[in-house]
Image 1: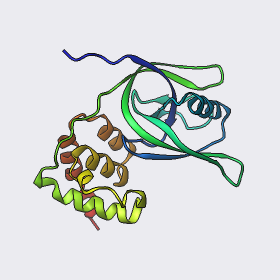
Image 2: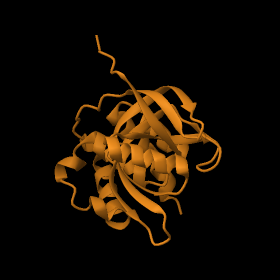
Image 3: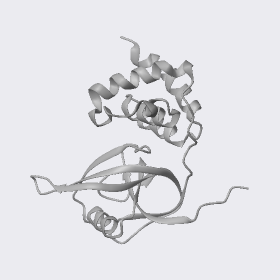
Length: 200
């Protein structure tokens, strides 16, 4: 019988985009509630949760976040020329929020259960085309992945998450790719979507 992980109490950062495990997120922070979030996470070395916005906007009133998101840890920050704080965060484990609440300052917090990582599965030969497509996408769109090991391309989870980041999927499709728990099903669905991008 699987042991449930303890609930986390995490600050939530609803965005109009999806962060995948292993992915990289660049954010410019200006709202006080998110400056507080960054201070808290840097002070404690703790993660925050990135969730796709289902209703609302990134700024202003608290948005309605998707229940499933990705933990993010701040790996770098700097003050931009216009005075705004820029941060880089790295995607970690996925989580599911069971309950969320808004603080008085508008910052969302959630009780969340961390999902276990997907088991490493080798990419079957029928998905070899996806490996070639990802190599081309990385060359033009994601230079920070250019030095990825060959073994990464053989990992079905890594391949699927990177394709879901870089292919022009709509946010609903990206969220579905995040929520799938079978790496081979994710690759199969991405393969079936591909013809849409090859039409003139």
